[in-house]
Image (tube, rainbow, N blue to C red; front, side, top):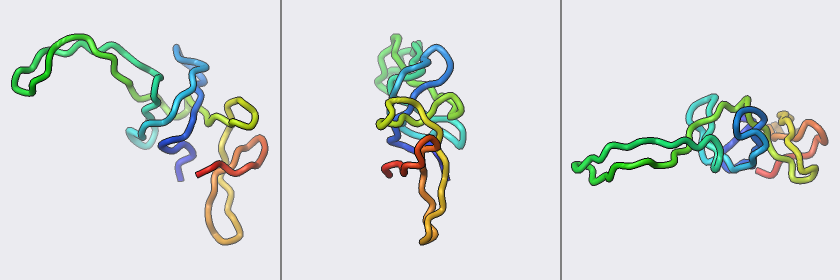
Length: 105
């Protein structure tokens, strides 16, 4: 079970975007995430007439490692760690480590 999922609000802990908050757009692989508004780079594109692409400089969101982000806890207004708890009916749910409160899924 992934502790950080698509649609979660996260806070960047390290790097040049430290402190920025954004929503997880997607998971690239097991360890990397695409977060909206975070880790944006300038990409130089060649024109490609076969694809109809014009050349130029575009902004592109690059993946960030999941260890460099933490879930945003709206109740406290801070970043928080996530744990997994097994309920009585056998379901696994994600909880905030600080309060034990269940994340909204």
